[in-house]
Amino acid sequence: MISNIDKSEAIPMLFIPSVEQTAMKTLKKEYALYIHIPYCEKKCHFCSIPVTRFTDEMVLDRYVDALLYELKYKEEFLKKNTLIGIHIGGGTPSVLSVLQIKRLFDFITEMFGKELPEVVFEANPASLTKEKIDVLSQYYNVTLNLGVQTFNSQRLQEINRMNDVEAIKECLRYAMQKENLHVGIDLIVGLPNSKIIDFDNDIKIVRELGIKNIFIYSYRLEEKSFFYNYFDKKKCFLQNDMIRKMEYAEERIKNFGYIAKSIYYWSIEKDSLYRYTSHQMNGGEWVGIGDGAYSYLEHSVMHNNFIGRNYQKYLNEIKQNQIFAQNVTSQMIWDISLMVKKDVFDTKRIIQKLWKNLVEPYLRKLGKRLEENGYSQNRNNKVCLSVKGKVLLDDVDKIIQEVVLN
Image 1 (cartoon, rainbow, N blue to C red):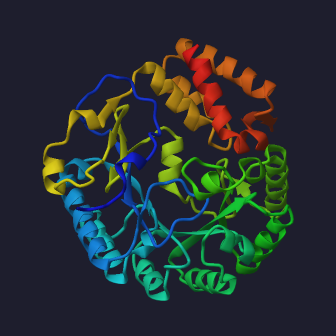
Image 2 (cartoon, rainbow, N blue to C red):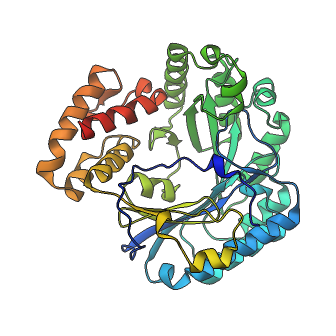
């Protein structure tokens, strides 16, 4: 067994597939690669993603074996096209040992060459050691992204994370002194019990450390999370309070010179980072490696779901029911849902990709609906999501579906 994730907690489908099914087709010229590590030392109280608790390094050894096997299995398929970026996510990739990280990166380097396109490696400060940072810094073009969430010790304890803020800061300082290593962090605004001024402390530390890349997420009360199951839902997510806190956070971050690269990502970095995420928002294709990973190729969604099966046999006998082809309607919903996550609405890309006469009426209707609900705004003659739209992104996605389907 590679992983013991409960089948009833399959990762939510991120797409809207049609009932039509198809075999995997060839890639286009460019693609991104996602490698999934579905293990955590413990689960954060805000998280709804199905993960396996890491308890045995031998399990992780077998899982890395499986990842390398899958990469080798798909090597010819991958190498004949252009790789634009790699994202190693989870779960918590930093639960891997120094040797496991080295095995994975050595294999990737051997397959694609030493001068890799950007490799983003997600990490939790609790499991990211100096030795692991040293290993990551030995490879070309690595971006280390730490899920800090907040520098408030009390909030960290309440969300079931390591709350030693000084240790987190020391981890960041050590990583940022590596000349060939880019560093970014995640912050969550509006965690339960938080105050609007909490962000002042967070941004103060960000500036002290000189962090150039920040993902700022608004807290979302997600089903199957600890907070959803055990907290008063009305107290966990006060809509107007959340919008107010996000408006405050965005105003503060802009005042310090950070530029919005997407609805989440703010940077003062000159280099173009997080290429995997950018590629997705541009409607690009990707290949998912690992248990629970998704691929998106030729408007088809493929889900790796080999829980409890022989891994090699599963890859050699990929079932049709794991592959879903999008029809034109679902493709339009998918593309528009990605469009709104960029800093400004990229309507030209969708019009070029789909038939102009088909998509333009939907875009006009969508624009009107979003503006009427206060979910969009005009900035420098360009349309983008408002803070309200970012906080209530689930509602925005529902409107997109309604506009296209009705």
